[in-house]
Amino acid sequence: KDLESAFIECESHERLLLDWDSSCFFVALDRTQSEWSCDYHPDKDVLQWDVLLGTYELQGETAVCKWHRHLSRKISRSGGENDGPADLGWEEKDTRASLKWQRIPLPDNPDDAEF
Image 1 (cartoon, one colour):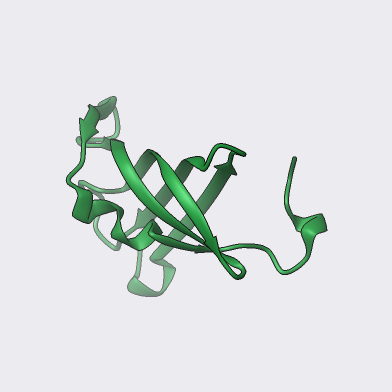
Image 2 (cartoon, helix red, strand yellow; image 1 turned 120 degrees about the vertical axis):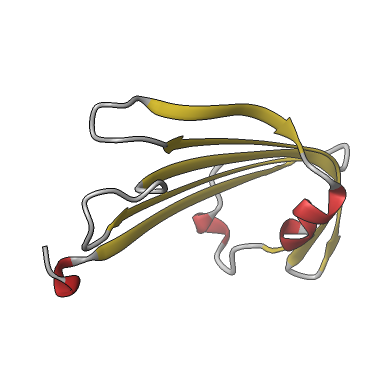
């Protein structure tokens, strides 16, 4: 394979539940697949789940979330073509790992929100 045929494909899905009692629940799924000019790369296929539980308050069109619990799980290919995936299991994350999801913009159009 030449360098021009190398690619990186990313897929991301996020879901946020805001409940009437000010509790919130967030799930993020990220998948990265990469192909390099060499035959083997340790992070060829990585799947990561992030699950957060906390509370929120609305500020305009933004949910400002305070996360009380953040669990993460990463599954990746860690060997050659015939090796199975490496599953690191669920891991409790430090509060700093949740900062990027502290302020979540809400959809402009209420029809974009799923109920």
